[in-house]
Image (spheres, rainbow over the protein chains, first blue to last red):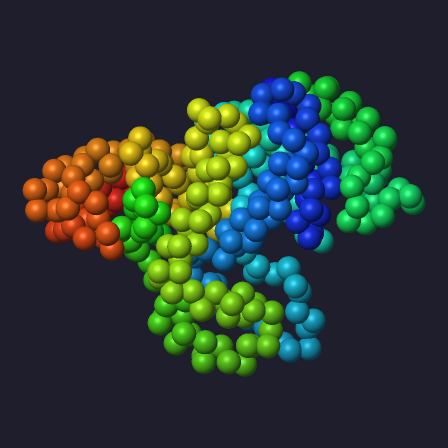
Length: 155
Length: 168
């Protein structure tokens, strides 16, 4: 079981966290990582647009106009898993638009559970950190340590 | 198993063949659906189809090309030169990609339950494209605007290939 790297992309498309756990991916400059994150943000939006599935007919609940429309219902999800011959990338987008990209080996099982755990760590140690400014690069020692412990135990 | 569409792009980034098996949300059927659901246009579920409606067939092909091109570059940057992009999946569909050594790109959109179709796309290249398009003495070497690709044998072969490989 190998986890190569974790990227976190803010809702504006900026790379706010970038961590390599295991060598395997090509080392890039931090500028390249920023560019990659920005272009991935755009590609993710395009994958949403390309949805070839006919839209589901308006659900019966929409006949009740008093109900506040949920902004998250029936919205097509963008790219979730990308596979290549050398790695597999899982993308998890939170409801607030933050994207977690996890690069693993192609045959890695249980990525969903890992992703949830990472999201938990993020909520606990980044979002609850009073010194953290939203949308800024993440520099939280406890988050780093939590990730380290979690990924090391796994591999 | 559902196959939504199939595209071939040549090495000049041009879309030389498009095939669709299901109507797109942006097509005429989608438009005729809108008045029926007129009462709920303001509800949120309608937002997304409205923005998608503007895309024509050609726009779609361009969008797909740009997307797979960038994803391929991203994969090669991260995984090294010998790494190749295979597929991606969203909640609604899965896109499979195969590139020949001559830079012809085959793209297929299917439902999410499909396994990797690299082999199937390779088969389409070897058994259909090479046989019926490349070996056709009447078709040009390059296919600007898709000339010579959509001939009868190729189309029929593709249809029977899809119906046998993905029985619905």
